[in-house]
Amino acid sequence: MSLNGEEYNVYPRPQLRRDSFFSLNGKWLLTYGEGEQAEITVPYPPESILSGVFKDMGKNPRLKYEKEFTLPKGFIKDRVILNFGAVDQICTVYINGNHVGKNTGGYNHFSFDITNYLKEENKLTVIVKDSLSKKVLPYGKQTLHRGGMWYTPISGIWQSVWLESVPQKYIMSLKITTDKNSARIYFTGIEDGELTLYTPEKKLKFPIDHGICQIYVENPRMWSPSDPYLYNFTVKAGEDRIESYLAFRTLEIQIIDTYPRLLLNGKPFFFHGVLDQGYFSDGIFTPASPDLYEEDILKMKELGFNTIRKHIKVEPDWFYYQCDRLGMIVFQDFVNNGSYSFMRDTALPTVLTKKFPEKLMARTALQKSAFVDGMKKTVKQLYNHPCVCYWTIFNEGWGQFDSDKMYEILRGLDNTRFIDSTSGWFKKKQSDVESLHIYFKPVKFKESKKPIVLSEFGGYSYKVEGHVANEKKTYGYKLYDDKEKFQKGLEHLYLEEVVPAIEKGLCASIYTQLSDVEDETNGLLTYDRQECKVDKETMLQIAEKLKI
Image (cartoon, rainbow, N blue to C red; front, side):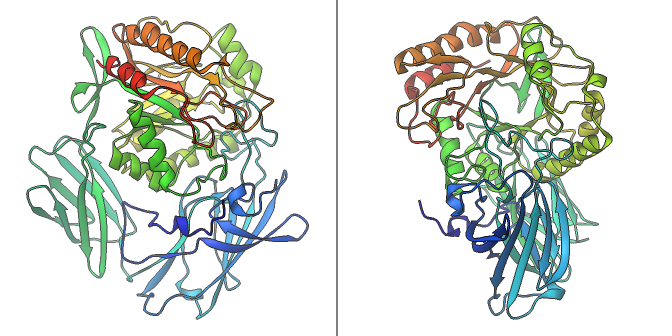
């Protein structure tokens, strides 16, 4: 497939949209290695086929991206802002040879005001370093030597790069908190203005005073997977105007018929989910087109799922917008750092004990600081998306430290969502849920004072001939060589183990996983997304039984 980057010339920030947009995706000059040069298509990482480079960048790559551009006449208002979706891991940015800023962290948005450095013809230079060090920065599932549940690493620019022009005083950000019939929006960059909310019946106008807007809607349509209703709104503040949206939905925990339950909009709700690593066969971190996010979501909805657990990766805003729009709940993981130990983090809890002293995990002050920084950036970045209903702090002990303290920090950042402090095992005191991973045993558990979430299970492997990344290697938690037997095994798992567990307090289940990823062949879809391994009607029948 030959792409030119224009596939990503969609507005990257749907919740703070203005009419000013100039995409810098497309062809750039990349210098890497020992001075080697190649034309690269941004935003695809250089390790991917779609980038046009398709090379391993090595252990400690230093990449130099260069892009020349001329802004259209009339584009510049007062200020010009350069925006990056994400760059892995440390990047320094120059315009026409002038240093404009630096960012650390491979999963977060960042921007710089470049107005004072612009000319008629401009050159943007981005220097990237990516050590893939497990000592400090979050890295997720990336590894230098892929295999099993660890995957090909990426480096450099992997989300959109774009420009916008704004007035001297403009809306820099907004924070939206809603409940069952009201919303409170905090703006940075402005003090006053007017917000217009569009309801099915009429337009409602609300003042912005001291950077705050209080909204009230009588009997609003509540957002849910079955009715993902979004209220569009516009904001006019001085010379600036933006478009955005919000949704009304509530999340609570209550005792229902002796069991603690997770409630959506005041009613017990079973979160029927699938794990999503966010990897693609041709673009690795970056799908060929942003339309593929929508396709993945719709394919899972067609199978009856209402929840995606986004596993140890933070996606572009466009993914979460599609979940908001289409009605797919997101359980969002934070990206781990710190070293992984097979014996400590997998073998020990699977075979012997799910308890382990955090003080023996030996996390450094730099690791802790980098994780907290990444967590704060992720919460800020995703806070406004109604689809995000659940945070996962640590997964299976990877990078785990001070989990009770991390819970308190996160609760201070966001008091509106469920928090799973230790997904799988190594639990401590502070967590909203009892989070279990069960792969090699029947789905059974003890009663708990907290809602029980089966945050990972299944992982059944079936390889579809002609649609696998590695014909020789197979990774999964139960292997099938026959499609019919695979389907029957999946049916038995749900109907005989998961469904009966709902009556005993189970509130959510996350099946591993949405698609195959490289050597890991336990997806419901093949890695290339060309084949669905399961029968849709059967999966819908299962979904009907997974209700409280």
